[in-house]
Image (cartoon, rainbow, N blue to C red; front, top):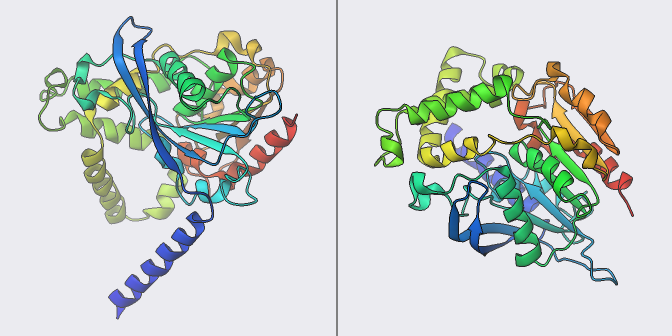
Length: 357
């Protein structure tokens, strides 16, 4: 009887989620190939494949400028697909919601090195070009302009690494978007504990005896240590204590996380996408940002801890900038709060209103 009730509950939950998700237009997957691309390192690729999803249809004004495009950028190790979830798409993309996909043209790319785009695990391993954030921005720009015919954005927003990309977008293409919303990020060089975390992750992989300079047959043991570091830094202590209140539950959570992640994570890919942040630093040119911008961080984000007081100071250099620090609640999820718009959606609404033309 208990098993029957559990199965029934799962059916009800699944049905509710599917009904919720069905409210927004089905995403359309696609691929765009950038040919003869030269990376900032000097390395070249004859073809860089960029995978993406789109929702909705682009709309142009009388001058031919696209007015309803929204670019949403994923975090380190993620993909555009991560936004097609009930807690994100189900809150933002449905009829009457903030980014109603019947009104907006939403673009969700897989960045180079991630998802179904070109990446080291496709076969090149450590011979894959050592891309950095500027390369990723350029490839996103080419996807939009050459692949999708988008010559203007209503909004660019992103989570974590995607948040850092949003800062760069606002600097490097100041007239391309009407508004920018970086989530869970800082507009500074990766230094301090953040850099140390990334070094720990990269070193755990590179010093693993079975890594074999990226030519491993099975995922190297060091990948588990790298995943441990990432889990710890990305977690929310309050929520984890609430969800795993006993030793047994905490151990089981960790074991399940590692078992799942070791099957879905490639060590070379992970090494590359953490190394990609090595030259990130938009801070010297913050004055170039002129569009309305709202940066949102959460107070329980251990990767971007509020006690650093960095954004409090730097946002004053952004002409139309605003910084929001979300207080810790039972609903915040540490660094991962960035993918729960039910928590910060009111600030997106204010930004869209503030940037109307």
